[in-house]
Length: 382
Length: 213
Image (cartoon, rainbow over all chains, first blue to last red; front, side, top):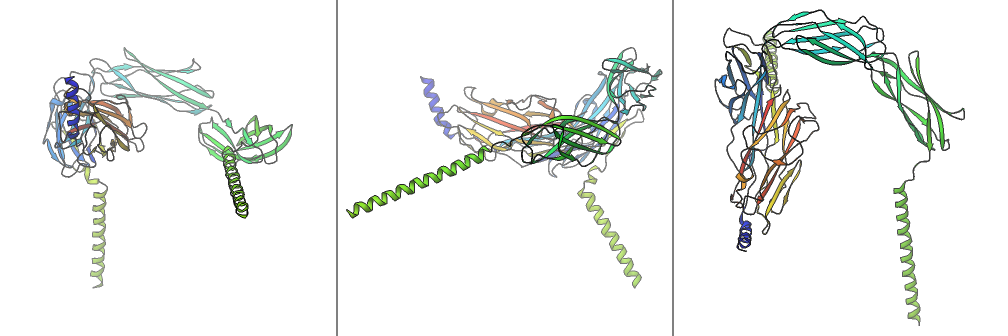
């Protein structure tokens, strides 16, 4: 009981409690350059990086500090800045590194913000100094793996780059297996080569196999005592343009756009691609049109657009012969299209009905008023 | 006489061109990179690669303003929250949300970066409720432009703010490309009827952006 009274009292007092949750300036910006610096770890190695603050307000006070891996080995020429000033970070690496791989050291600059009313913000920006510490013993990664798309009968280039990130050199003899529908269709072997620490080696080979058109998966395997793999996909093209989709519903009494979606399966550009469409009913032609020509880039999908006239056609199913023509080649598709009655405009009907209702109501009111007037006249005559 | 006039004309034009060059250099920020250098402090070892680019973060809106207000008498608390670009919402209180909109953080630099948020206070530090209840201080990070922020804490959900050192990482990869480089940070406050901290209340939201490796 006492508790409830106390609560009511506090709630009443709450009338006088106020919070001003407003604040300082309208916008802020802070930047640092360079954003990324990368180096290899060397025992006892010392280097310096000059940084510049960008975008800060000329009167903005800033603090500089280091965070992350090797932060304790960083010294600055100054740690308090004003506006877009520059500063130098001196990094004196230790004789040994605890963590192999990519060590991340952040050189940060933060705004010095005086406490004010409301919720304010403080920006803090960190440039990344990436220090690559060698793994003990042998360690390698596949830095890149790529295969070019080609056409049937053209050569396919396999490119692989192996990076040694360990303290010792690795000896590798990479191998690439090519798959189509889960079956191995080709195998590419590179000669063995040593990759020294902190270096990378590129392996390239042109396949002597003639690939048929299709999509292929390739897996590169690099064995240096431990096996590492990476996958890539490549396409072999044939001079073919596929018809993937088309317009199929049209309205009676209208000229409508007829769209044909196409897809190039060729690894070169194809010029002068156009379509011819013949529409017929019971073997009798009812319309014929041509689309404008386009240039189809390699492996590109595009739409060809023409106009189909169903002005004089009746509702029903018609047969369309779509021919996409490119050079001396042609892709044909025989499809059914529907000519239907245009949909009823419900909105228009509602408006007309509403207008009619209002007119009828007006007529009724006028008639009522006239009858009332006549009745009054008759009464006054009596 | 004619020769000296021509000479004066050429000198004048040259000076004008030089002036235009200096002004252009300042306008386009060419001198921002003046003095940039990396190098060795000793003769040992080597520095492999330096990528010359900048990390730059902009807060196009860096304050939330609710003005002053009170909890409606008889209510346990009042709730105030921002909602992106729309005006803030005030429930059970008489603060004004007309100028209260979410913080907007934009990555205008040349690299992707991570985004961590940290406050100086939690809800109890902020309001000091007598009953230690009815008080909330939350944030909600969401994409202002789609695909701006990825690989971090959950986006689009209200969660309690974090005042511990290091804060909460909301984006591991905050994109720097125009059209996908802006995020909102919405703020929600539930002010208890029995708050012990009266008058002007303040806190600082620290936004830490580190270049993504």
